Image 1 (tube, helix red, strand yellow):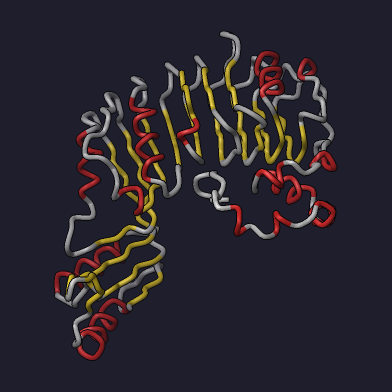
Image 2 (image 1 turned 90 degrees about the vertical axis):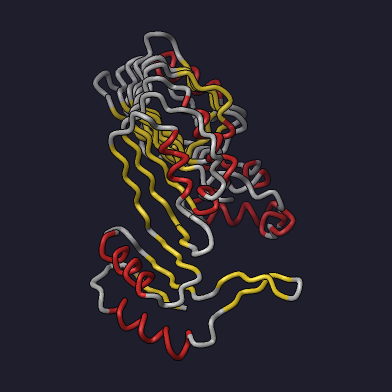
Amino acid sequence: MDERDGTEVKNESKDLISRLPDNILYYILSILTRKDACKTSILSRRWRSLPHGLHSAPMYEVPYEDNCSKLTLGCCNLIQYHIDFNKLKGLVTLILDVVIIDEAVMASMLSTCTLLEGLTLDACNVVSNLIVTGPPSLRLKKLKVRYCSTKKIEISAANLIAFDFSGDITRISSFSAPRLLKVHFNTGTKASTFAHGLAQFASHPCLENLSLIMYSSTVKEIPQSIPLFKNLKELNMNVWNSSCGSEEDELLWVLFILKATPLLQKLEITLRQIEMHGFVGNWYEVEFAIYMLESLKKLELMVIDPSTRCYRNGMWANYVDSSWEEKHKPIVQDKLEKVKMSAQLRIL
């Protein structure tokens, strides 16, 4: 499974472990911890079909008390283990961590626990569809859905103001939240899912704060025409594996996003990994690298790559200046290693 976008690997022929006989898989489950055994249900269809009911009850006894306002249920099968939500009507915060649920469980919970304001589903296996909806009296304000296995997601919450999502956002077929103010989403490395996410949330007129986890494979494919965010005031972009090339403007995508956010008041871009290609040791390249190392406090890795893509003799190839290794690389290395930095520096 791809941890960043929550999708199953399509080519299951290479998954040799899942092809083992049932009795061996049952043995593997029996020696795992309760939490790890439950996590196997999101690996593939084969693991999902195994009897995870061996760990059907929650790790802790459910406190059926009138004053129970916060509850965490982890590593259990809520389809098999019946919870009486009528005895938990006072719940304000509910966290479901690696549990198996279905539409009936969700419907019972949301229709009964109308005081619920915060709901988290973390690495849950949702049989069929994830339907988050309830009566008009439902107070749900904060919803987090992270790396859950489900076919389709439908959300309708009149009081929802904050939404945190990690996984395949294309599975959200409908999303109604007229008061939505803040969104955080991480759709992994698929460019198509990232563009879908932008289109999904641009239609919310009250949205003021948008936080994105982005990857180089997604930012390069951002379309020039992005739906307009009419009221967005704060934008935070956490970029992984950013590439700075000399032959093309790798930061052009920032302009596309800025054009779609005319009322933006605060922009924060956090770069954690930077690759600089076609680096030949010019003074301005070195100064730029020093500036990045000194300025980006959360930077974890900088890669200096002297190679450039060239088309020669009818084919593309990587080209490196013959003088780089003996002449330019030692000078660049000496200057950059003098910089006080927390990031790892890798000079190829």
